[in-house]
Image 1 (cartoon, each protein chain N blue to C red):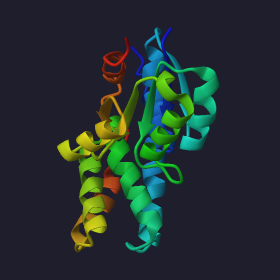
Image 2 (image 1 turned 90 degrees about the vertical axis):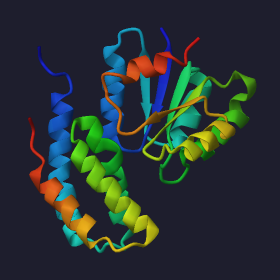
Image 3 (image 1 turned 60 degrees about the horizontal axis):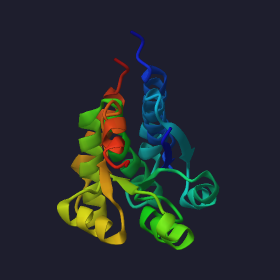
Image 4 (image 1 turned 120 degrees about the vertical axis):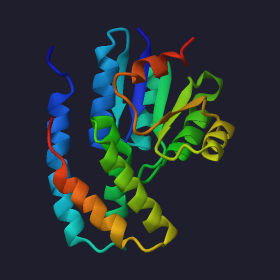
Length: 86
Length: 121
């Protein structure tokens, strides 16, 4: 049976590619950064990417708390680069 | 057919939620991308349940709920917040504002219809 969510998942994966590029171009302190990361933490798990969702949540928490975020930042970019359609 | 108003500024999550709800043939689903749009739609369309993202630019979920309460008064339908911030204290705060329940992000799209149905009469 055809997966009704497949077209939206493909769109989400394409958005992840774009997000990875945008995040690499942004400073961690840029408000656009937390917007992207917040969106990913809320949406990635719904599309089946639970690790990406957790990685985004970890970075969002660090950024909002003003904690060092270097490792969480690197991990999120790694996860975004690894996103593939099933 | 119960009418569901789904409000979220994130295109990805709004589209998958609306698709998932629409796959349940018993729901009539209408998407909105902002609190302002939801306020404009809710009065005329008379939804049976409203799902509000908490963190939206401009008018956020709690402010949208407050304005819906002002606009609709006792006619306001059940309102659910949809959020990744759903610690116990968060949920208590949302309920104190008048939300009937919370849908936690990320959610399983195959389960959202059953979740919403719990809040319908």
